[in-house]
Length: 327
Image 1 (cartoon, rainbow, N blue to C red):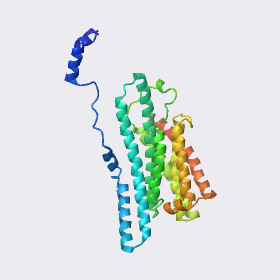
Image 2: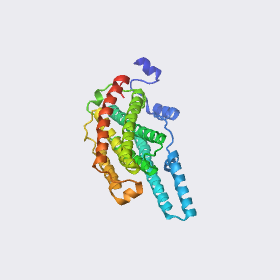
Image 3: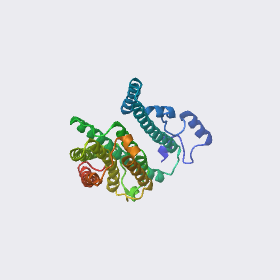
Image 4: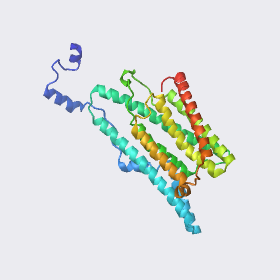
């Protein structure tokens, strides 16, 4: 102890006020220097730099040009719809990023006891991993489904439908997932180290993404064989939404979380499913998103896919943890 105090040029009684002021002036406050805050304007502009968004903006511009040349008002409606979806998607993304950046700034200003910080850090780390698990799995399945169907000469979902899928699955439910409470016994767990996207997480995302792809591709081609392309697209469109919400349930089961502890999560899922039903079963929604109403036969196929997805992804998660270790 005496050697440590001597090395720090201090004493058992601490520093005097003058010495503390001198060291503060010489070395600065005892805190990490963070990156400068990002302006709200930059966060908003970043939402329009995605390649997919740029393609959609270009498509809207082309539609407007075609409408001006051909003097057809239908193209104005299509262009306006694409522009509306792009703006809504940008607003939601901006809202999430803005609140996240401000939340990080608020956390940096906190001076909480170490026990509380430890407990909250474990909860936050768990929720970040669940968020990454959910988002990457769904997005990987979207890319693979479109890629595989395109190889066979089909477009399984339209651009507007892709935007809607991202809107209802990546906004409310994804944000609510980040507010999950800490599970019981979190403080008794050993400290966790390593990256968020480690070997176990990458293996789980890849394997579950492939499982979801197989189920959705099967639903698309079954719908194509039994009915027509429009029905097959509607089944795939709706299948994306319900399969990603099923993923939320599986993640919580694998984490050992009670299903109904996060009321905001299930409120967001319920509202999103209601909005999906409006698109499927109202004339305005069907016309805007090129869908047809799904009957009992179509829903029975989607339900079978959900049951298979729940069983296979649950087993896959256990196998990944056994092979690669905890997530």
